[in-house]
Image (cartoon, rainbow, N blue to C red):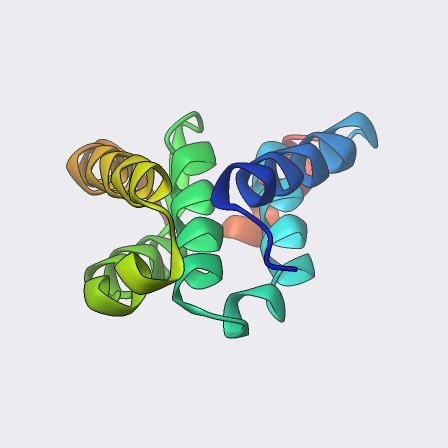
Length: 125
């Protein structure tokens, strides 16, 4: 059975907050969450969209974003195959994903770039 987008968004955010509860910095918790979901994004266009949009949404709450992560998020979100995505999701989920995508793309440009994420992870714990 396919997982719906809302459940996958929830699982991604839950994993992130579980890492935060382990006293990790926001940057480290997000990096670990992203890597935990690497395989998920290969299941289909909806899964890929949700993982990168969720990562982007969490990044919006941080004061800085690693420049490579920012580039990757923007590149992947902009390269989503919307026709495939529409075929894989119910209409309400499709609209929700597009709304979340637009928020990330509109706001991520305003986040300050971080060129030294390892030092930030260590000092922000």
